[in-house]
Image 1: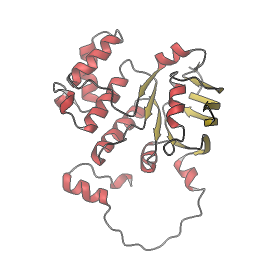
Image 2: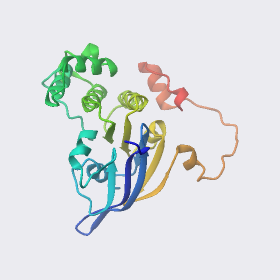
Image 3: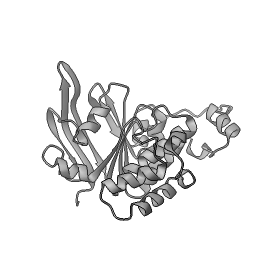
Length: 257
């Protein structure tokens, strides 16, 4: 595709009876970037994802993904994307490796075992690859879920509230996996209701409120919407996150604060 945008949305509308869920949504996502669609529950984030992934038809407006119109080129769109929903879609009876091999076979790919082993290594799951998924932690299941979504190397990945219900350490594991995706050139559209998640991950952030995008920009641009910060001396106290990771061990997040 020659266009610099992996996703283009213009005038998207969707209603359920008298409830207007989307009321003219516009945004673009640059290829290889992480775009966060931020909003509270019921803002319409999942509806946007369902329309872009061809699971739902819009009432009005247009949308293209990887250069394909979602209304008229649905099969091409589905070939170009992967969707990870709010809950991990993994088979708990199978091992992690077996889950990956199964998806690779369903996609009719060659060397499914090699594909599975590569993804297990990429997402730091090699040691747990032979274990049943029922023994995995929440973060491990989510990482496996994302790994399964990458089979076939889709250029665009939709992550619908990927850290909902996860503990702090598991959230950070998922954050690292998402950053790695973008680092490999994958375009990521992320929906979230967590402000810190959007701040940590996104190249651009759009706030969806009552069915409309009310602001769209980089974190630096959004911060300029507020009055300039005042310089004051404040004694810094440890954050709960600092205490948590000091006790249980894990990565130092200070450099990302």
